[in-house]
Length: 301
Image 1 (spheres, rainbow, N blue to C red):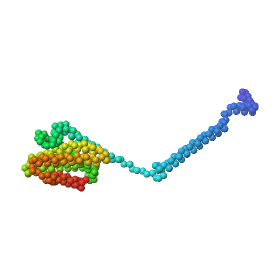
Image 2 (image 1 turned 30 degrees about the horizontal axis):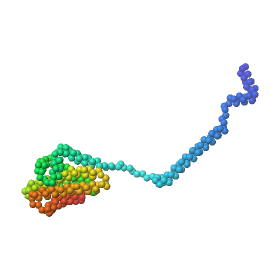
Image 3 (image 1 turned 180 degrees about the vertical axis):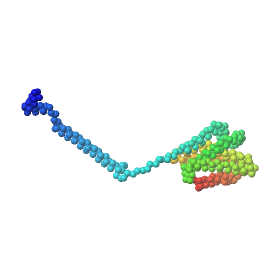
Image 4 (image 1 turned 135 degrees about the horizontal axis):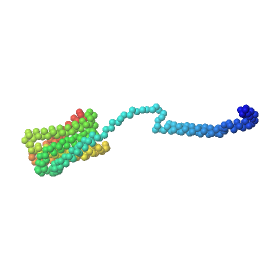
């Protein structure tokens, strides 16, 4: 009975009432006008953003096309990058460090001999026989300083070849060995020739005095060359010529003092003519050095 009553009420209810109930129960319809306004705003903002992006790209492209330092018109070019073979002055540094270390150790262990060498050299005459005899009796310090002069003179020649005539046939390290050995062989041959001349001419004492003066000047020259070697090795290229000129001038003064001391010491012992002595200097001192230089330039470098 209850079910039948409900059906009767539903079918007899007025249409207006049913519509109000349906409207109340139905979901709310969206506001289409507001949605259209929001969509138009989003579309307008999106179009503005696209226009701004397009304008930015056009400005950037225009700048790239008109910039003379940036080339985007031609085809790209690629380069093969190779690792740079950097060559510093480490080799020269360690060589000169060894030279300075040898000099420092020598001055530490043979300070008396080191001081006597300068005293005898700067003395106007060699009449201080006591200091001279002390130098002659000290064989080991004399030998070390002679080797030291050979090393310094070889390094000096090597630096001159490196700056003014770089080696083409041999590497720099081998050229350094050649320069040092060349100086050593030159003075060893000279020593042997002078000893032979003294033995043949029975003037052994005179020849020994001459040899002593030669190697005394060489010892002082080797010590004085050390600061020039350091400055010449690490100076700017624009200063190389001036440093070389000063160094050569100082060495020339030492050689001139050697000849003056030699002439003064020999003049009192043997009859010696100045012209004959000059011829000897040209034949035994200058010409062999020039020949050695010519052979080195033509066949070794």
